[in-house]
Image (cartoon, rainbow, N blue to C red; front, side):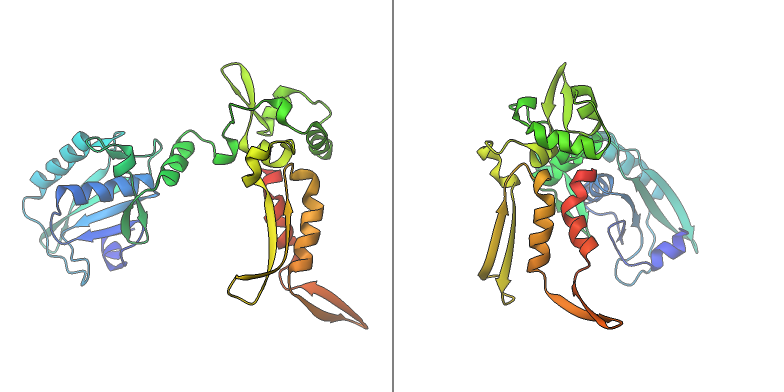
Length: 285
């Protein structure tokens, strides 16, 4: 995007303007937030409201100062592209930050917990512990569902549920190496451990400690979510119960009637394929 086009854009998750050089902490927070997200541009020398190009003094000196600040203060290392741009005789600084591959980024002097920042709309916010963990997983190339549960073993999986899943996918062998392909198990230091995903889908019903993996479907009277008229809970393993879950979910959803020739057909106001997608997405993970 050309710089003049950028200047016309509103501030966003990937764009911020500063009329003059901000405080050190403010600029570092923004750069960290861009790195922890999808990247972005910080443009200095343009007013953030009127978008007037006011320019900056000593741009080369400022460029060196910012480069040193980033190198000395942020971990892991960030290498932004800083360019000095002339607009009608006024110099502005465009700091282009790429989305990082080694998240989370943070201030060395403060630590990950209190200085990992993210962009929410056009604002910079401190990341919660949950978001920090998600960024760590992203950096290692796996998601929460792929995390192992070291306290459990393959014996904590319902073998019938696993066999059912493998048969549906035309896999004949019930072997550990085969199960790793589907993220049912992950190998760690020579041992095989079940993942979060595998406990949700295949965990033995005796694992009461993991009841937060259960699925509860509730129907409310009114729109204030206070009066429950019906509620059904499904415990692990979830996989063998998917058809039943979908049937219950359909029965709770409001229906409408349409004419098909001489026939009247009853349909849910939410398409059935969408209801099914809500439930079966993890199975195709």
